[in-house]
Length: 114
Image 1 (tube, one colour):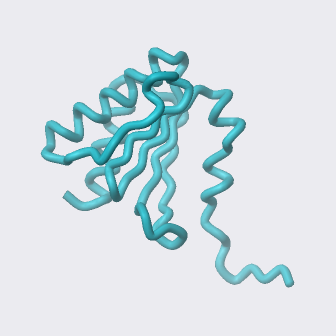
Image 2 (spheres, helix red, strand yellow):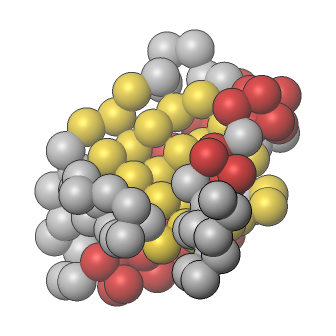
């Protein structure tokens, strides 16, 4: 399964459990580690954990072996590493604080601010 297909499985799994504000970031031009990041919010620690768990279950059903999960003990930010796709499930406060969408914005080509 290619990275685009894995990303779709992830988004579907998040939507199934009512993730909020799902954003996919194409970071292929900026990272040699992963192709896509998927960022979303949960409404509580329990919801964040449920979202991450559902991603884990759904990708495994399709034969994808997750590389790891971190943060499930606290539940304010859970990272699911699927190799070509990294999933960040966060409480809104953590998401606002770390602002991954801004951090991983693709630079606009042709802009030269020198």
